[in-house]
Amino acid sequence: MTSEDLFTYFPNLTEKQKQQFEQLPALYEFWNNQINVISRKDIDQLFERHVLHSLGIAKVMPFLPGESVLDVGTGGGFPGIPLAILFPETSFYLVDSIGKKIKVVQEVASALGLENVRATHSRAEQIDEKFDFIVSRAVTRLGEFYPWIKEKFSKTSKNKLPNGILYLKGGDLTDEIKESGLKVIQYHLKDYYPGEFFETKQVIYIKG
Image 1 (cartoon, rainbow, N blue to C red):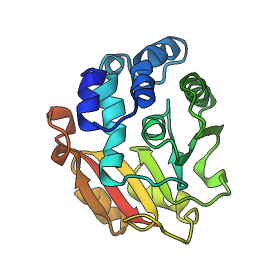
Image 2: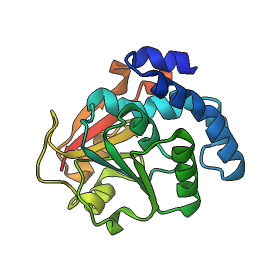
Image 3: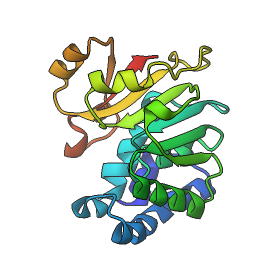
């Protein structure tokens, strides 16, 4: 998959946004050679497995100007960096408990000129702020994840769904959802993107 393929799913990008997405492969290849944040086999499929996957959240929930989003366990910046490119007027706070990964996030955000991104070496539990939405990509099981962030939602909701979690997960989640005891809405990414990779991928929404 190339950047041009990516643009077919998001046809209203500005030239600046297109340029930022086009910069991602070279930036991640450079930083991945120094600090391994993406598996070697995935770096060649960055657009499909990382960028487009991250933007699955945008298909479910287009963020609004002025909203704030926390990305927990961002790793090398997913889903936060692609979402921050797509929603330049939304504030993104990317955190990870591994410092070297946050260094990559900070360098990539700086190279892209993303003024709507903050990145901190921290655990979610240590963040003392409120957010409209919290995003993450398969950091842990839902039942373990929810207690980390359940107190971190702003009271006032402005978007089409109430403030909450948008969690990227894959595979059969029946047992995990049941175990968590949480009320969820499942959005299947195969409804938005073709291809085998997205066949079992989902965005899980949980009201905050």
